[in-house]
Image (cartoon, rainbow, N blue to C red; front, side, top):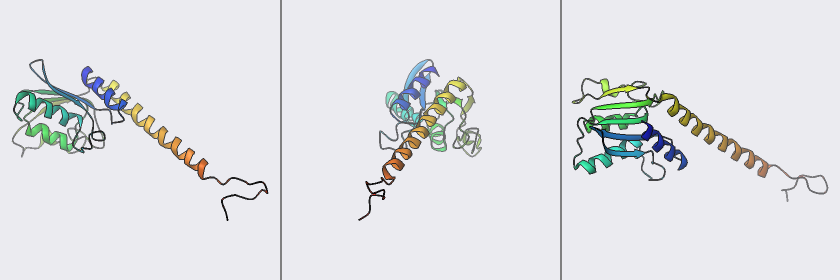
Length: 170
């Protein structure tokens, strides 16, 4: 999970939502990734998907049985579906994602009985570090937006000319 957190930090440095994922089997690294939908111009380039793609190429197989994914945030519906399809054995996540999490927070994809593969999961591993990283990222983003709004308001504010009248008119 520590490696996944380092990858999440890399995502944050690149302006991406800080999520990192590491896929292993029997102690061997199969694939890893960080969120990169913005930089890759790819809406599916979530950390989990990037790690799955790397592992599938390394293994020459899109099925990854008995593998274990460590991810810094609870997977979304898309990622949970891909993990089921790849036959990943288990997912260990750091922090829940109350709005978009699809493992325990919302749709509980891994518990759906109609799926032909069941993924085991547990959460809370290094939860505080992952949560702090996510909160700091979004705090920084909100502060940047506020700063830009203030700057835009200052530029748009009327400037008094020498006669005391507002400038900008004809």
